[in-house]
Amino acid sequence: MNAEQIILTPELAARYLKQASPEHRKLSQRAVDYYASDMKKGRWVLSNDAICFDTNNLMINGQHRCHAVLLSNIAIQVMTIRGMEPDSFSIIDTGKNRNRRDVISMIGCKDAGVISAVLTNIYLYKRNRLTIASNGYMQVSNQDVLDTHKEHKDVSNYLNYPNDAKSIISKHHCIFCSYIFSHIDSSISGIFLDKLIHGIGLDGESPILHLRNRLITEKQNKTRMCFNKKLALTFHAWNLFYSDTKVKKIQMPNEMPKVLGCKLQGSIFTDTKETIYHEPTMNELFDRIKNPKR
Image 1 (cartoon, helix red, strand yellow):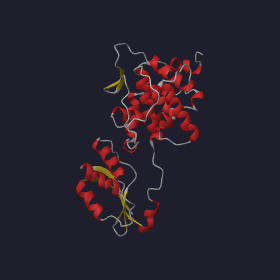
Image 2 (cartoon, rainbow, N blue to C red; image 1 turned 180 degrees about the vertical axis):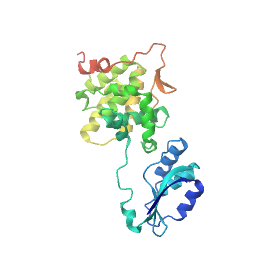
Image 3 (cartoon, rainbow, N blue to C red; image 1 turned 120 degrees about the horizontal axis):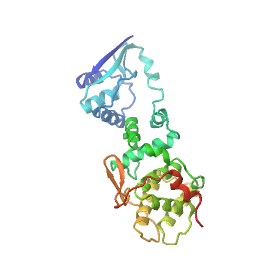
Image 4 (cartoon, one colour; image 1 turned 90 degrees about the vertical axis):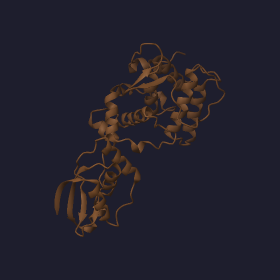
């Protein structure tokens, strides 16, 4: 076998694809788009995952990278290996790739699964790509999540998840909403979460009551409403609560609502009210949740 580092140009990628083995796995356009996006952003780096050719000079690994080079029209550095046995395609690429949770764990974050999920949602939310359909997650790369963490390192301060919230709202759901809402108004955010989790002081026309009942019913019936639909309902309830609107029931919105009071400027969430924003600590934010006034 012969290994070599080369520059994979669009012209060379097109030639390699003509040599592709007919036994290649089915092309994933999502993977191609994902790779091409990283290439356009200058994030593609040389790795030990080589483009491989068998003894018949057929390419048995690397079709997605070749298609991505054609799509992005950008040349990248790759390793090539020639002279592999034709049946070796069955064991190529069966290892586990690093996911978003892995890269967040590698930089020392606790509860990396939750933090990576929250950062992914922040990344999508800031770009208006957070939808009810949940179809944007595949397009968020590990590097996107790492870059978002650099801008929002304080996410880790929101991990103090109250135990009695579990019957209402998941940790990921709670932390993401806490982060968004507290950057609008920390006091109102605390009240909203307190009432949602404990159900205290809610009248029959409170949007929080109707959200709470909907989430409890979903948990009890195990109807498996997707996370993004729960998020859409929560954002909708927040908007009604924030605008002091009374309702007799809460409807699922047709699309992901914009969070009332939240304005994105550059890389941070900012308060749209003419007040000086105070970043709450977790003890401040969840004090009323853990010790509600009855």
